[in-house]
Length: 313
Image (cartoon, rainbow, N blue to C red; front, side):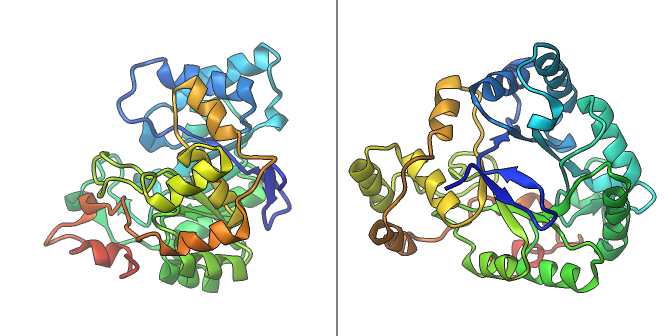
C-alpha cells in the first residue's frame, strides 16, 4: 500500500499524519513532538486553532525549514475553521489567522472543524451557539480554494445527513471528511457514502480515547480480536488498528508526543492484515467514544447528543 491517498483534487494526502490535539501539554511539548515526528518521517501535520498551539507549531515548522529537514512542499498541513468564524465574512479571517500563526502562505487542507457555529469571540459553549448555515460558510470556503490559500477544502465531524446536504449544494465538493474512525467505531455507512462521492475519510482518534474527557468505554485495543491479530502478526494492537484504517481506505491521525510511539505508529507499511483476520473486525462491538456531550443544552441548538449526530450514534 502506498504511503499516501489521492484526493478528489489530485493532491496526495499522506496515509499517516500526526494529530496535535494534545490537551494541556506544557509549552514546547507539541513543538518538540512535531519536530521529532517530521524527522522520523511524518509528512502530514493536523492542526486547528481550537488546539491552542498553532503559534508553537509555526515556530517549529520555521525551524524545520531553516534546518533543512524538509521543504514546505514536502509537508501536508491541515487546519480548521474555528466555530466563531462561520459567518461568510469571517471565514477569510479564520484562515488568515491560522496562516499567520503557522507562518505559512497556504494550507494543503482547510476543514470546517464541526457543524457548530458560535458567537464570534465567545467561548464555544451551548449558550453561545448560533444556528449553522453550512451553505453560506461553504461558499466562503470555496473562495479560499479558488484563491489558493487552501489547496483543498473539507469538513470534520459531518454525519451522513450533513454530507448529503453539503454535496447537494457544493460547487467544489469537499475533499475530506475528518471523523472519529477506528475498529471500535467503524462508520461503515458514512464510509460507503463518502467513497461513492469521492470524499476521502481521514480518521482522528484512530486508537480511541479511553479515559479522555467526553469519551466512553475502556477502549477497543484490548479487544481479543485486536490482541489476537497483533500476536499473529507480531505487531502491537495500536499498529494493527492503524493498519486496519489504511486497508479500509482512509488516512489516520494518531496523536503522541512520545518519540518511540510516534515511530511505532508510522511502522504500518510493508505488511498487511490478511483478509480472514480483517473479516473478524466486523465482530468488534461498536461504541462511539467521542460523543460531544458538551454541545448539549436543554434550551440550546442541540438538545441531545443524537440531535448533533443526526441520530447516527
